[in-house]
Image (tube, rainbow, N blue to C red; front, side, top):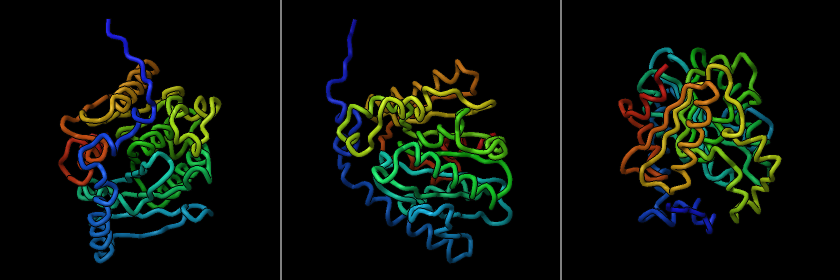
Length: 276
């Protein structure tokens, strides 16, 4: 029998250093994101830096399709709750916008200024504000830490009103961190300050999904073993709790390019997100 024990938790969750030319990211996202924002702003289909709360980073961008929106997609960025903001990801709205959906992309306050539980509250506020601006079904997606945050939104303890939760038709967690307990063993937890109580209250895999929850856990085949495990974990547990779940491993994708499909109208990732 092959036994596996993780001895280096920092390496287990290190992405850039384990991807060939991984230092290209996040800079590689900057220009395509800026070009998409400029194009939609020029056509009058972008509202940028909308406030959804009182803190400086409580801002979101909202992108619109041509004609009336069929519904709303909210994309929540990653960065281990420690870095990055909405400006890196704008181009990932292209697939949903081309299919007739509006897309909201919020920033949020980062750790250590705010704990993860507080970030969860902020993301819920952003979703609620965006839902007031765009009618119709609501789809959520997020990458890495953002995958954790959108999964958290469809738990029974999520800080969303029943009215907003009732509008959520689908969630796609991309390379999501669904159990926070392993992160407690990494060096970055010096800033994240996750303790046992917060891990238990904020890990989607340790919580119950809301009624009629529907989620796809999507990960790249070339990702770290921990991300593959975290991906399968949530789908497995929530299936046993009555949610409609799917787990997808996309071949030949790593942690930084697994999200690229969202920029394409016909990509399976975009189709999975918009299916209802």
